[in-house]
Image 1 (cartoon, helix red, strand yellow):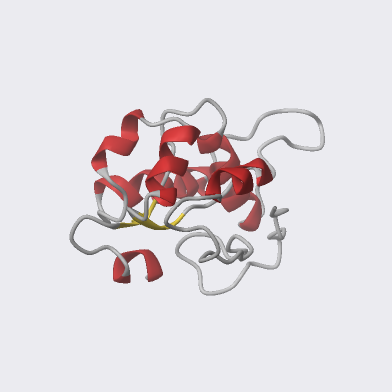
Image 2: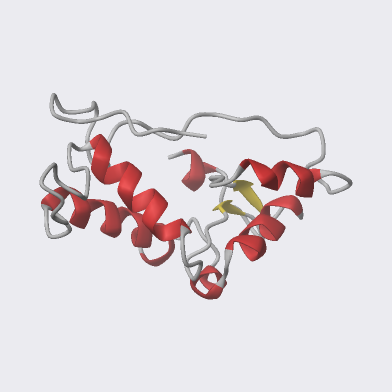
Length: 139
């Protein structure tokens, strides 16, 4: 909802790195884990065909395809390009996947104007974390 409310004119609610080799999995893992799917089961088998993983993927890609809160060009962005979108003030939120991005904020329009928050711990489509859900780690 916050991303929708801050998407106006040339600014989008979220800066996301869809083409990055690592970022998509970090978000899908976190959202699926919040719903109770750890992606890799205790016996070491991947559980990527569950409803929790499907909902995580759908949410992640809906941000650009359905919700319109991400610049459509982000489909080809790596993390550095998403970070640049945020530091230029063209996105309200940058879900960080590394703390090293802080160095990139210096001498940009967002320098001294940003705050940190934990990533959501409630899975997509839910109003609370289910009893089997796990609070995924956040930076």
